[in-house]
Image (cartoon, rainbow, N blue to C red):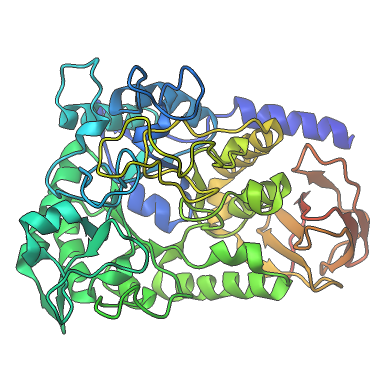
Length: 515
């Protein structure tokens, strides 16, 4: 009987429409802010420069006779993303990059050299359209598929920009621009202090907002948002919202961050960023790789739930980002699968990086070797081991782990279909007999989801989870179709065996978890 239910469930997800189009008479109606504040975004992070790069000889770098990723060839992958259940793209910076004191043979995406134009590297040579019109076409094609677009706003300026506009930058006692930590290719921008806003820099950011709206973007992700003052953000967000009330702002900020990357830079805490208009922030779920106990994970979820209840501000599932080492290198494919189901079942916006769904380890063979060809003053292919490439003309992200992909697609179909339920379901922590085993439920009057996970990636666990009101008569569906598990349902508890790094997701029909 259970097997038949599983088959019917899978067929139902696959055949069901998962979202309603927002096109009206061919015009897109931005709804990103509302979607995000309801925790209904399934966000996929892409770098246009690599997203659909054509590495014909498979040496992982885009040679002179090969085509790098651009706005036009990126369109070819949008149906793939739609099939994967993605409804929002986070596009890494598309502004021009610096070539002086640069990193990598293409230059870092975050070394912005101009706020008022787009990166010519992203222009397809096969189209006569300007790079701006190509960007518009790409976003229009996203919207046709009901995919929203967030564009990244870098936090620092390239050395090239400092040469032409030194007045834009923070300087030390000797008048030298500030290098934040080890980001040697950028310098800290000056946005003001003590409640005063630097008008030159505000004007540049205002023009950036205008440009993003002109090409059709639905929101902005602010890189290291903590390095600009709250007064600056307050004014800029209000400006954007006057033009489009649904224009979403996501802050790269964490409750775990307590100081600026440089003593000369301002530091605005995550709560102040939320209070001046940001709709959400990163949180610190990227610490999952280091957490050993259920309490660490559950406490963090509770923390963000309080923010949501009080301020109607939310968070992304920042378990892995383009700044983090690949889950595959950290703890293997089971870690990726745990991240998928946490993103799916927790009260937050799902967040994934291009290549994650197939297990890319981002361990490039050319990393930090001398470049055959360079377009900057760096003669080497710069790379952080195991991290998403931001610096070079490199291959399309992607691995070969089909098992991750299968769970990724299934989980997103489930979340899309039950989106309205998941956005309103109560989060209920559950008690386990083991410190390293977390458990929680999401519940409403029709059904409940119980999630049980083992944070020990070396040893199996025999867990007993208390679930008030549960009886042996309650039937469940195992949402992880690839895992042949048979938890024992007893009066008021679930007994189950977990593999190292295992996560189990059970759906109970006609049962409400009390808590």
